[in-house]
Length: 246
Image 1: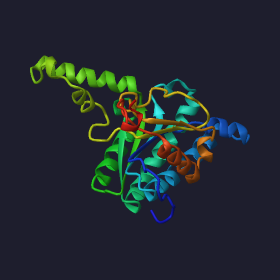
Image 2: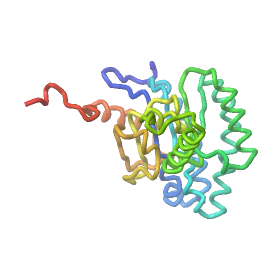
Image 3: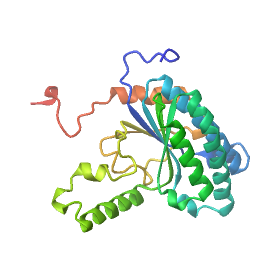
Image 4: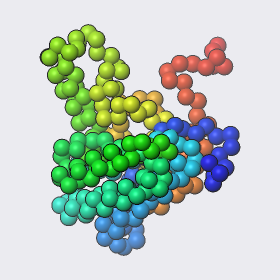
């Protein structure tokens, strides 16, 4: 953590980011959307490296949602090309940065070559223990919960589980994020103020920060500002601090 002076700050263990604003960045700079997406992709590595240097243990980025398929075929194809290139680059980056990579979302909806690259990357990086980088790809929280319910229902039907034994932990363990701590801090760039179907179960007690900065312009200093704001908040998880008691 020598690169950044975060003395006195409460560093979140897990930060989630909704990467928004690539298209608006492209429009602002009078370039095609794919240039904006490429700039956004380049920024991912910079922020992941900065997060690692700041002592963050997990970082999840919303790369492609289940709803993004509704975009134009040209834009989707451009995003998939960027994704293919990025997954290949991640093999070297994961080793250089001691970074474990995980992909959450419905992988069955992706082309086979992308799924093969995901499998290769996850296997290659599984023992790295510096920072865990989670990419939400073809991900939607409602779809994730639907798949979890189907799994639990199948276990009940087969007799492996009784419905009365289902707990919140049962559901958490059936989600794509099994074994990953819930996010402490969620950041959304570009000024939109909504979750957009992202980690809705996991973010029940997450602190939200929304910034007008477009994702390609989001820099480590903006991440530090978010951590500073996070540090000022009193996280009570539905309880009450003694100082608040009457």
